[in-house]
Structures are given as structure tokens and as C-alpha cells.
Amino acid sequence: MANENALSPKQSEVVSVLREGRATPKHIVDQTSLPSKHAAQHHLRELRLDGRVEKVNVGLYELVEHGGDPR
Image (cartoon, rainbow, N blue to C red; front, top):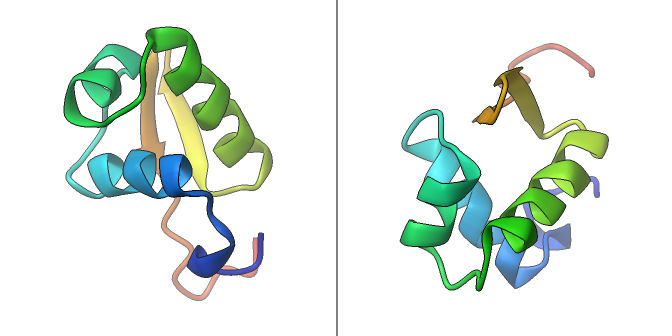
């Protein structure tokens, strides 16, 4: 996923929530159309593998700020 257009609609919802700040899977479910915490965790895992999201603590996620970093 090289750019935001490559995100699925559900992943875009997750990213939108994370733009507001760190979030738990439950908060993401409450703020999106995702049906369950499991679904949120699935999308968070995919976004982590893509390098877009970072797990900062148990059950707490945030967007990775790339800036000039080529990660």
C-alpha cells in the first residue's frame, strides 16, 4: 500500500479515527462502521504490517508519522 488510495474503505475509517489521536480497538469500533473489536484488530494488524500504524502499548495504537523518514 504505497498511498492512501490503496486503503480499503474500512482501513480508511480506522486511519481517520487515528488521525484524531491514539485509540483502542473498542474506540475504533465505536467511531466507525466496523462490526466488532475483532474486525478493528484485523485492520489494525494489516495497517501495522504496512507500516502505517504502530502499537504503542497493549491495546493502544497510533498513526506512524513518516515525515521525511523513508520507512
